[in-house]
Image (cartoon, rainbow, N blue to C red):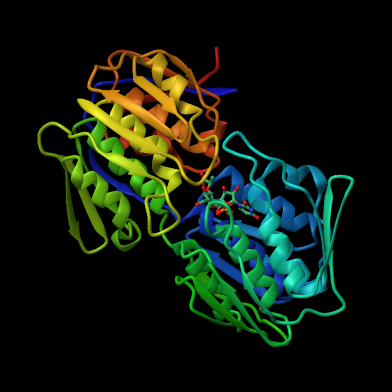
Length: 420
Ligand code: EPZ
């Protein structure tokens, strides 16, 4: 198993190109199942999650060809049930259910278990499918949705933590081939949902309101093939912006969308980070010492939960008390104990972490527990004195394309090694 060995203390400098968005590309690849015609998706990042999704689509009968960052998918003939093991391995693959139900009126997948960040039920996905007329059955670890036909309906998809991103996408995809009009209230407004809706409309769907809490889908008889350029990854962009601030460097994010990053850039500005925008480039640098801030994660356009851990790493370096509150996932503080290994002083009080920052961090061996926690440990390692070894970087490879190479290009002393 691989690890990353980081020698900290080097300010990052230079330019980094932001890749396509993981959380947009996974449902967009699944959406290709809605048509028997070829689809072409560009700006697809080279990630293990993308490889998993490709395997799942091939298992269902589609052909998937990857040429550089372009993926050709042709779901000419497909079957309605996903491979148990493959689907179980990647939660995001639940988004094959909507397209299968929409096209075949039948979808069977393994129930995605919980993960380290929370229970992550799919009750809202199933609520939406049932509202369209599907019969839902959960048995032997599988969930099955079947319907003679799907009928458009009005539904409310808000849950314990507000809207659901993949739930909105899943139901929206099934509704594209339903009879009549579907109205999704409390829909997720994330840019990844908008990108999926744009791809579906390019396939001939009739979706309006994506990006707002009310999405309307007017069903059509059939969808056709389409081409699409995936949006840049706002979470990857936020991660490099925070790494620049943490190392007191200056980094330009190429190809990032500032309009997808308002909440993050606003918080960085509040804590004393300088943000300059020129076209699709955002330059991040620090002007003097950082100031403590409070952050609460919320559905979009609030502060993203996928940047919570990275922001916490920055606050460990910031003199004073910062409070980070996680409102989306019930156990997304796995990185706290690992940051403490580097000398951070963090106390957890219910959904909040109280960070007493400013004490210099010192390098140590740490363990990645999930995708964004591993990014936070890399940022802390880049700022810490001495060497940090981040183990289990397979978590990182799920969502960051060539992170160690990109960081090396920015001057970081980082290398991939076999775990000792
Ligand atoms: C997407 O997950 C992202 N994953 C997550 O990114 C991201 O953290 C999350 O949205 C929130 O922004 C992908 O897009 C592949 P949710 P998703 O349904 O759609 C509860 C990363 O690091 N809920 O919006 O699975 C749920 O438990 C990953 O890239 C229900 O209660 O998240 C959570 O508390 C991690 N019932 C909240 O809603 C449901 O049926 C939000 O979850 C569905 C969700």
